[in-house]
Length: 276
Image 1: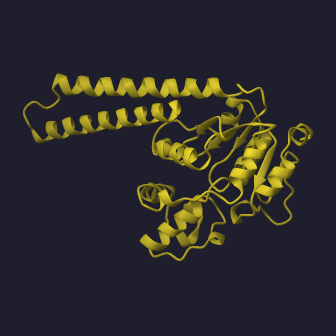
Image 2 (image 1 turned 135 degrees about the vertical axis):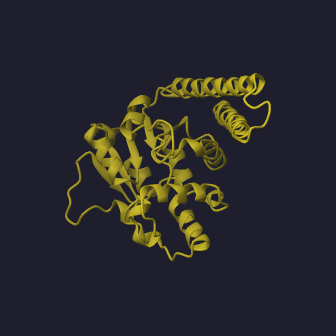
Image 3 (image 1 turned 120 degrees about the vertical axis):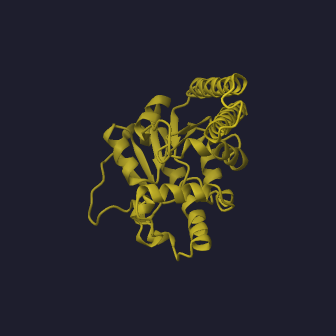
């Protein structure tokens, strides 16, 4: 709960400060008397300081929570492992942009590399994703069947942390989603901001190292390779077009495929990870 409040405070303060500065900039451009007055600039500065302090405190809260149970930390990806981000994006695209996308069309998780998306560049794909986040379809993302039950089983043996590449911009919505559908499941949430328009980006290996994770569950073959190269065991989740790899390709021995949550509950144990 404290993390959610701090996250909201950080984003709300930054948003109001940005609005104040934009207003003052417009008034300066328009030649309106009183533009850039000390009172408005002072308020914007104070709000930015509040935002910075809230972000710092949020980091302290989550870092102090990591590993406090004495159980080994297991990092869990969110989208396409715990919930269906791409199915909701497909509904958005097919409804608002008249595409005819299906899940099998996504041979890459880089949406600008999916021909039927019709996105010419990474920048255009980023704009489209931000449009999706502002739409009603983003709020319709659903948890994957069996995820909550399997995660609660894993929680008997592990301390669970969400490690997601999601943008910092949607951190409040993400935390609210996790609290609604996975209440009491995760100790912390960590954001890589890989496709954010601004802000620092943190790799999956670095996020896992920061929380002392003993393994990662993720649907991305790219992230699996990165973490395996950093000597972190990975459970590659799901049978998705984007994570099947090349025909005949041999995976790093530290990568184990798990087709569904039932398989995860059976195979992901401290003993199996130790052997990895």
